[in-house]
Length: 60
Image (cartoon, rainbow, N blue to C red; front, side, top):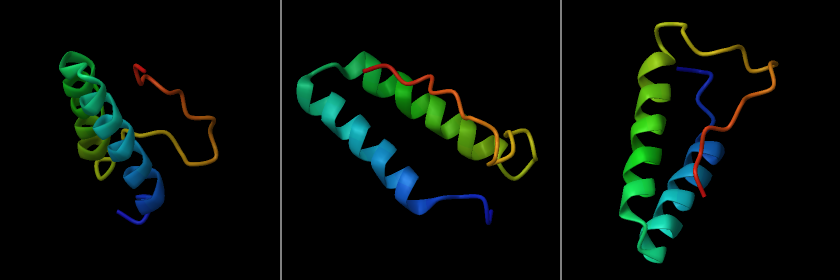
């Protein structure tokens, strides 16, 4: 899991917290599901290489 960037993960968790504070529970849950899927895919090599431009599926 050396590809895991703790700072980026913390920022994404912070985004989910901001969405929860705003009261949009549906979007917060959807974003957590996306984050979970990405984290689970990382060890199996399904995630793109870090040099590729990542696409952000996040809802804001």
